[in-house]
Image 1: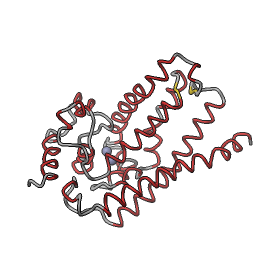
Image 2: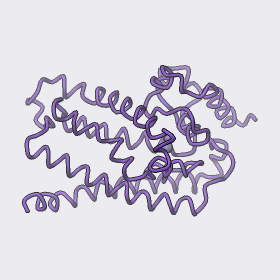
Image 3: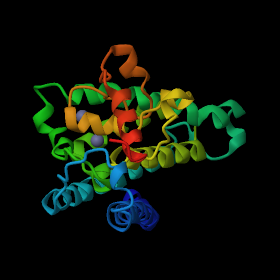
Image 4: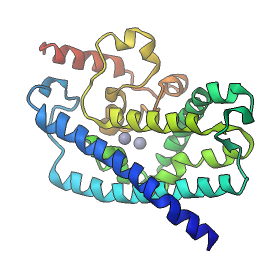
Length: 258
Ligand SMILES: [Zn+2]
Ligand SMILES: [Zn+2]
């Protein structure tokens, strides 16, 4: 009963956050895909217009499962924290400052590594059709694809936080920044347009994935598995060889050159 009471108390805040995320996705779709459609037509990564109403409808249905599972996941973490099982904390003085200041960067690297390996596992021919196929049903991606997953994939991709929090101090604001970063990075990967500047891959930005990077994963399927950084793909030789050429091609297209 106590647990149920806690869940109900936290429901409005969790629902509010999910609704906010959803509104941002709808806003990005309306601005980029509708309002600026003509102006940004040379910024599109996949030129063929393959997204249709049927795809968006199924992405919206999948999103509801994703958001529901995310809510349950947040509740589980709150519960474990309240019961004192985790080292998740809000008082900055509870652990050495290192954990508060460096936490986000450590979490980002772990999240990227976890994503890469789980993602590769989800592509295993024996399990692909049961879980990850749902996300890959979208070949040409759009903002709604960013929440279109099988519910189990949502659990698998975020589950590292639970065992990790049992032994590593996790400062709540650092976790919050990771959540915001992950959300924005996910939209960037699925927006369907390349907004990074032409010099991106000739700067330190080259360490990071771009919208084109993940878009190629959807259109070509067997490479570019990384989410935040290109490091694992480069180390394991799974990055598409023509990725940078494709990125430059879109930049030329943006400047009006064929
Ligand atoms: Zn995939
Ligand atoms: Zn994707």
